Image 1 (tube, rainbow, N blue to C red):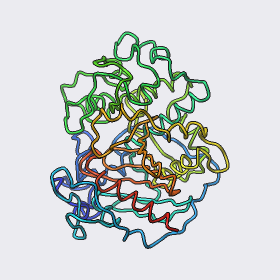
Image 2 (spheres, rainbow, N blue to C red):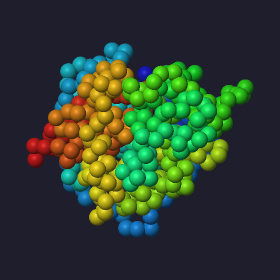
Image 3 (cartoon, rainbow, N blue to C red):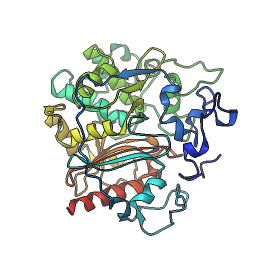
Image 4 (cartoon, one colour):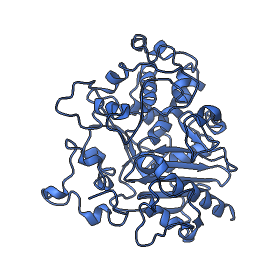
Length: 429
């Protein structure tokens, strides 16, 4: 199979992954050979990550579920928009028989184009659109990848607001063991939150030798070669990092910032990340299902991308943020923290990263801020995971996907204008 299969051809039910007792060799998905992370098998494995990795549970509280009222609409599938640009290779990647090259595209077509596994649209807190594809359903957790970062940094920003954390303090102030490594000697908590550290670290999803893949192998999130001699935990890898540029001068997306931040959170609260998310968020949202984090061999959660949760529960988190941190009749996150996120970060620092499809954007507390006329901002993860919040339209979109290419540049041309078109459509009511 190749990554030229479209969303219809690569449907995991159609392909019959992991069916049988045991499954035949050509339908088997495994961790140790890396097949769980290769398309098209990812269309099954991203909804079953717990079968490949050790995990820590984020339990739902023994409290009533906060229902999401339904007002489903049949008109959204036909909403049209014009993609920002062609796919990098010049093709309409991911289209099935319903797609077309060039010109406008419908919302329904964009879901296939982006290999959507699940999509939910909330308008004024009501579900107006909810669709599942392949093996995903309403109560099956899906990996959120870097949407996880927004959960972690929102908690960290809350602790800053409460005075538990000093955003101007250096990382070694909380983690003295990192003072000697050089990478974090004068890096502050704010540098971590806004990803402006000058760490010698690369995040290239197409290069298996990139730092992000070395970090993943250290934490057991990817299989290690037989001759592996590197770090054997997330913290072990973090201790090896050095600095190759000044901190605080430019935005550079580096997953390891989040895991270092989560280490700080664990140190100052005495709680694991799973416990902290459960206590501060999960127990307060009236969620439906347990979530879980993948963990390394020492039981440390993958804070940069290891959260798995259900689509409705991810939408509840997004709706809480849209409402200024208040949800389920309580203030979950301080209003000031959400306001700080919405104001965004330094656009000049962001521009230096070269995201040509995101002109005028910024990054704050591990949220991507559009600064468009609707004040939209988003949590984003590789392969198409997203929480998109449009305050002007009173809209939240939660999406899981399994696009064959990781970087969001492969999805943004069809996703971002689609979200904006749906927002404008809903605002007509």
